[in-house]
Image (cartoon, rainbow over all chains, first blue to last red; front, side, top):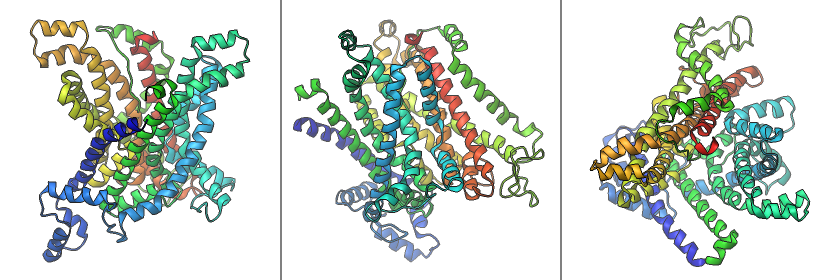
Length: 315
Length: 287
């Protein structure tokens, strides 16, 4: 297993290098002289030269990349132009908030998607399956920022059940934190639950056609035991790996949800950085998201190998 | 966005059309999309107020006989802005996909057909691009290119490109092992002729399905970027930008936030249904 993990880590390295080249190149997309964009209203040639020298922009591009990636490897993603704080520190402050949102959204998605998928597979091509599929299609097609607005209107403005915005740390007040984060988690988890539902349905449908399921039924086992004890245990394998992959996507989905519910997380940091032209933060956020995504891919691969007895035996 | 794996034998278009006509998903999808497309195309000749015409006496009015869907914070007619906004959404969907197809399909064909180091280079770059979640990549590109509908379309198109490369590569690898491609090689056709006359026509169906499903994703992405202020710029109408404004007037004008969202939802459902229907019609295993 250790060798397998080491191999997967090695495969991830070229991907990470290419992502870092892409993220570094982003700044070169800025139209015109990047120093003018970074300097804002300042147009004094001496100041512009000083910024250029400070950022080593006169060096060849390969040297600039080498310097940037070397610093990044040591946890230095530059300084935020807006707050003059290290980008790594900003990300470290905001990431726990988004991870809380992502975990709660994943719980919502699992609670809705997996039972829904099992139900649809068991009732395949029957009325219940069609209804569940229509709900899943709707959940996939609904823009989550609009769903957020509608939920604020209904649940907060009209019914007054949950707060419309803001954030409370679970360390400060656990229950208030859960209450504040419930609606954003429902919004972010909706689309995800549909994805999980469709995959669970497909995986369960395949397993339910297997010979061993027919044997289990022939033995006289109760339907509940056949579905949960035999079929689901085998169908869940690809779903668990899918969940690891989707967790990376949750970070991206959080951008809009955090914007609507004014949650001071990773996503809001991204949008604020975009509008204040804080390019070092945008680069840092993109790099971190990619690293998280690659890491979750790795986790998915290792989980799959670990949970699959046939693969585990070969490792 | 998910990969599709339909395959189509040559000259099967009549069977596909027949199958599409009997496919409830495709029919429902087309029935939703067609009226939206027609309204968007006819926007300049429809008897509706100008989408930019403001009226200080009609600010945030509820739906009425004069303004069927009410008015916005500047007294502009919401129905008119929604119809004109449909043009931005549909244009973004189609242009983004065109960018993804024009860049992704040739690269996918090259990777799948030649294999070896060409495949290795293209596949590694594709994997790196796939490591950047769609929306984050679109936001970053739109941020660095500058906020505008054109740049949003470029950003969405480039973000959708890796999926097209991967799908095309997989299809080409399957097709190039077929006897008719071997035959084409045996009669001495060059690579370009084989790729354009024998490989490409046989990988079109799954690409059409993926493109239709990706239009739905692109429409949501454009609305998301416009909602964040990185897409269509004011005063030009767009569904995402309308929602961004509407969220500030939830208590005063709740219907304002309702209609643009319903429009996005219906359009995306329409393209998803059409994509599902096309997949069923184009995949012989579903016949």
